[in-house]
Image 1 (cartoon, rainbow, N blue to C red):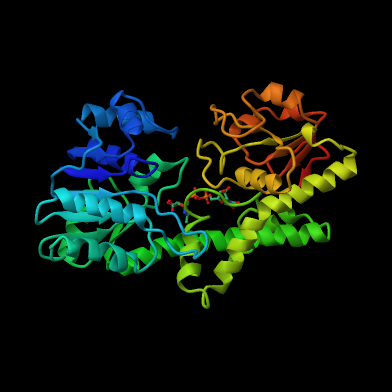
Image 2: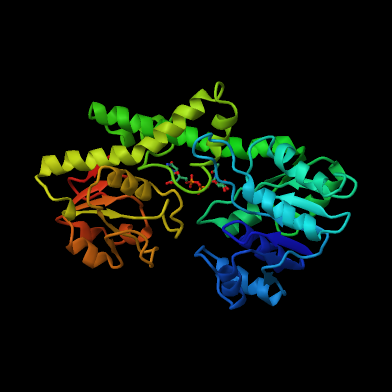
Length: 406
Ligand code: SAJ
């Protein structure tokens, strides 16, 4: 039986995927509300195909509990934030989960850490916890790092099809865990050592962060001299070896806006490009705020109460608001003691911020300037409703005449 610890954005789909492919699974989370919701037959976030997968897993006998289980295999999938000052990984949730596993696990068990961690974290923080409990790693307890790679919005497909990395001290143990993931994963699974697995995961997200920062920097340069960044990127990307990403209002989510900081925190004098890239991405919500001021001046809008932000999530068609550019922009605005802008997002049904709307038409009625922060399908399908509005489109999803861009 597999005990999956942490039933969030990664742990839950992984547990469901294993269970629906015939593996006996108990999912554990210390959040009682979350476990109760799952036990009541409901999923805890929206994701394409998740509900179907959930029902399949329930039929296959998956169980959810607040308790850690006595078993031979644990998969730990808990958050790894970064310390805002040191920029280093904050491994406290992983350490707490491993400690709890140590309280119940028998000798011979394998502990798989799925959470993203910076290179050396397992050596520094996880191994000592296991050893402190009197276990010899490699003899009494096996340790594996199997970082996930799935993207919110396409999680179910990517769990099935992405290639994966397994890091283990011992190849035989790595192969055993590879076979477990191969119960559902049709991609190639590479077995390597733990430190390499830690580093590859962080590097993958850093690659994306640096490339997004490049696009964002181009947007700033082009704005400065009134050039069309989108046309320029489109033409450059016709070169066989150029593939520039899209500029945007900033970078959110729990991965790309977080993981690269681990490298800056651990290697401050070496990770220069990464440091600058993260700062560039973090500057984008303020850049948008400046664009709002400029456009208000140009169009004669003097009242912030007539400005509205469309989109609260960190990207399109997900209900995840973690680190979202809109939240970052609102925070920055609050620091200037300004009245918060009006906000609407079809995916956020609960009140999360001030001046939040829950209906597109009412929101549009109350604003003159609409800032598209996210290109949800809803707004793409309702472009005609923006006629007569002043629109700042930070995602290039809107083609109405006179639209403003980054
Ligand atoms: N963004 C841009 N411009 C782009 C692409 C993205 O501004 O051209 C923004 C998005 O709007 C969003 C942020 O970047 O705010 C991140 O979004 P994303 O879709 O690039 O990635 P995440 O954070 O949802 O998922 C990433 C993925 N990593 C990579 O693509 C290398 C995913 O595969 C990882 O599993 C995930 O991080 C993770 O958990 O680490």
